[in-house]
Amino acid sequence: MTKIPLLDLQAQYENIKTEIDAAVLGVLRSGRFILGPEGEALEREIAAFCGVSHAVGVASGTDALLLTLRALGVGAGDEVVTTPFTFFATAETIAALGATPVFADIDPATLNMDLTGLERYFTPRTKAIVAVHIFGLMPDMERLEAIAAAHGIPVVEDAAQAVGAARNGKRAGAWGRAGAFSFFPTKNLGAYGDGGMVATSDADLADRLRVLRFHGCRVKYYHEEIGCNSRLDEIQAAVLRVKLRYLPAWNEARRRVADFYAAAFADLAAAGRLILPGSEPGSEPVYHLYVLRTAERERLAVGLRARGVASAVYYPVPLHLQKAFAALGHRDGDLPRAERACREALAIPCYPELTPAQLEYIAAAARAALED
Ligand SMILES: *Cc1c(COP(=O)(O)O)cnc(C)c1O
Image (cartoon, rainbow, N blue to C red; front, side, top):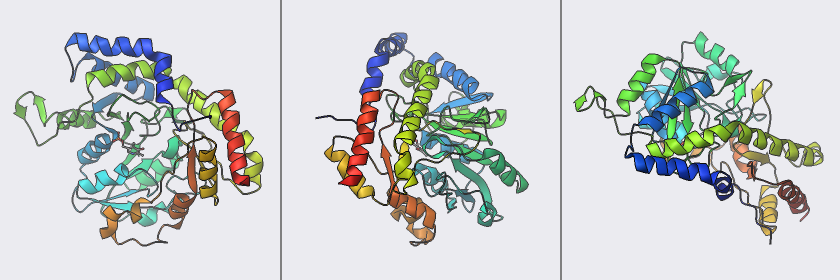
């Protein structure tokens, strides 16, 4: 029977195996595993790719967010405004620093934080805004930067799902004070383990991040402050350098998949049975995930599974209703648009290696599932 996974990392590896194997073996032979030439080269290449002056490799996307917020001075008693419709780490890192995540409801058209009326979430304690480019689609960053600047609040991009996404020609990572990337294996630019990076044009921020990721050291064994151990290792950096060369073509292929689905599902969208991923004028999305919304999610997921097509719910629970944030005192209905997205969203396969025949099969399977 046909089996189509949500993402096919083995197929990707088979296509680039020779280069990946050589890159990994090169590191093994070099004897340098932490903070070496591969990591430094990747930092330069990512900075150039994003159009910023600095990039700092860290151990994960979570650490990229955590250390950036910490370097910006976020701590106990502070508030950070962000979206409830995202992966947990976006708000977890805020709370881990002793600050309070303040959740702003989303724009149902883009599933990103709604910028209209965003100011109502600001208080004198608002220390930062974390904007997530959910599923690889950037919000109106010019507008967000203007709102934030008017209140003197720094913006951090959670660009974990958006390496290579752009807005009016300016890439994710180049907006706000800094952008945090994740190289978790399933992200658009994925390592073979954990990894992350912060992109910024703020030299002082980059310098502080380098100190924090290395036990508060500038000079080995002389510790200026309490830092942590959060580095991107040489094997992952070498892998990512190979993959970065393919990323523009891969992101382009994901956009072609999205275009295929948009055409294939146009009638179902017009009939109100499916809501297709939104767009934002000027934004060039990278479709980290292709997420449909439908009131018939269960029927669609079950019918796809019966036909061998994987799908997955991103995200089942909005962050304001997570048990871990119970102390914030939120209830059902507080952020209705995010809650509705959590009831209706379903990701279907979207990756560069999908063949035309597989795409036709998925579209037919989805259509049949809705008739079951
Ligand atoms: C994946 C992800 C993170 C965390 O990245 P890790 O590398 O897994 O720590 C943070 N925010 C968003 C939106 C993500 O998708």
